[in-house]
Length: 379
Image (cartoon, rainbow, N blue to C red; front, side, top):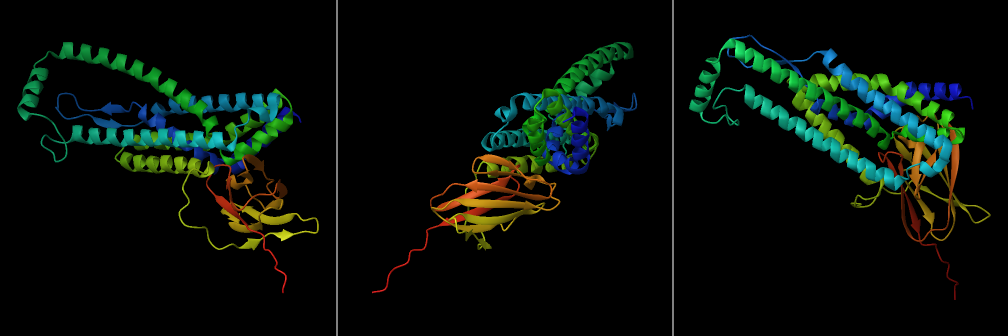
């Protein structure tokens, strides 16, 4: 296909379908930008009051821009590799599950750091002896304050300027490197739309075509991620930072849980709900099941088939643009059309339970393989 047409298709998919899903899956990495932020301060000279933390959107724009640039570079490079090497470079469900767990742990750690830093900031702003904060000996604090105020204004200004300049330079380099690294890392946390477009990149058969479709996706989802990044940076410098930290903690735990579900590493507590469908057996001896992939999961969520016979699963969709368009079943990824059907054939299986999941591990379904019924002759 023409790379321009592939780029347009990826852009439209990103704008129409990837905004919510990619922001939800990859937005957790934007928490890393918060921990590298350097909010501005404002205060009144000579008042002895603690400086007040302020935030300007212009302070956040460079880090968010670097993050999105790194994300665009990673997606473009992956698309080129997929176009050249085909499915050989695609990540299988188990590998993707491990990456999701690792990403969830990283986001959780960043959220804990964000909450801890907010707690320390609150103690620094509180008066000496404030409950829950340790300020040390108040006399030592008074002596230190007296010594500092007795220093000449000229030497204090020069020293402060030098320290501020060095700190800002160091912080700027660290923030840029962190933002670029987190942007590159988004390719390790593909949303459902990304997985489906990876197949398009493979079928393109060329590096320009593969790069074009994933670059279009990255650009199409950039506005939502930019808005989310700026929002998180704003939360980090306001009293809502604690709420943002809690939300980030929940996102990290959810991401790790999705990886555990995708890899089938979570223990199954109890049994699924009663089966809502049973496979029919055709004249050729092959069992057939119809399962609907919707934006709210798979219907039916549990089906029953007979062990020892091959099974054909017909996954049907109707306007599905969520993560259920990519199904991880029997150790492989199956990408479904937005509207239509795709048949997956499984060989005969022993008794037990087959678990499948959407491409991001958010929704799961089960097929129970039961012992075949045996007929006994009457005596």
